[in-house]
Length: 552
Image 1 (cartoon, rainbow, N blue to C red):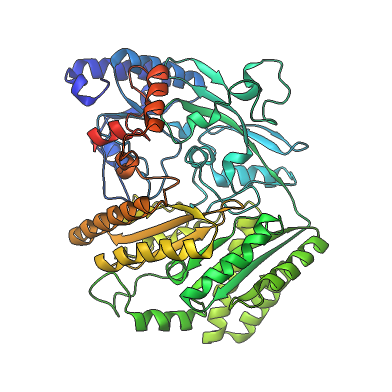
Image 2 (tube, rainbow, N blue to C red):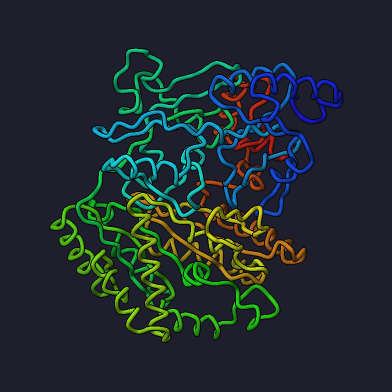
């Protein structure tokens, strides 16, 4: 039901789209080939053409569109801004669905500067909220991710994504959702369904069953508004970078930092990236030196480390608080890392100014160029720590792209449009050095087998767990390389899953793999889905393994 097979009658589809046009205006309903191709672009080399595109303006539009879709037995797939890079981009899980593009719904409904929260719609981007807060002089920061300024807050939160700041575990800093159900009914979660409620965006749980989680990583409803908590300005922010020279040395560093995460000394989300992350953030694959293959020779990789002044791993994080609190945290960090091989550098606004001056004095020397690059990176990290998004961190998506970075990068960068090849496996693991090395070793074996360099980041997403992001960067214009990339992804996914390192998030191409044993959890999810969406019109296959298996 509600699939393309049920829409053989083109007149019925035409009538449904006509009714939708009456709601949102003809200019906001498109079914031409160019639009359908644009929304089929995929960094996963898995283009899924939608039937059409519809762009509602508000929650009332969404509710009316859903009712029309239900009457026509037509599947709809909501996206926020369609920039879910590496996990599905703007594509539906299966063909024959109408994309509901919510990017017109981009209102910042309310900001409370005293209680530090905002109420936003799905089209609100990282850049938009950051600019809004700064232009109005609010002493508040919103958490940022490295996915670029044009990505949606709500879209990322619905995937349970994470950023950088102490508010980086984003779903934990959300209260009060507005949701359109498959029936067209509007649901307010938490206290929001009580008209007189004064704390709808301050206390997420409300009274009674806590429903918010049902609408993340699911197809139970369409979130059209939510409250997001904002971080008050800190008096002092320092960024720190810890360079770890050799691969095996990272385990002791992870174990040394864990107590500081547990006791609250380190409040931000720490990111631990390997050398490939650093290389890809500042350059492109050196095809002149490696004309064949997608993997760097060991000697060249070692030389690139030396030229860049980086180790096998780099730990990156930020310290927030008063000047005295940050000074104490720096002392605690140095003490914790004694006995490890990590070399720590602390970056402040003062040190960035000094580095900038030194770089100008050194001119166009090798040392001067390296220092300028480090200062530029430091400024970008500082901006992110303060809630100002920076597109430079999308550079890694272009690592294998033959034509390099597009003109004007990073302004409005779009890896799907630019045919970048990206596949991610994102396991969650205990916050222990031994587990991190185990996951890396399992993944590296497959990456080596299929001829790819392993891009690895492990982030301390909470006080007890690491979230891994293992990236396969490939050349989408090379059919053989694309096939190897998909095989590599599938093998890494299967090996980690079997070893107990389950992903926290998956791409559309992997959703059928989430229920290999048909367990009671997914049967319960199916029962809830059947109750809320009996016709199955909302995003069929999205975090719905049984249906996804039939769509792929």
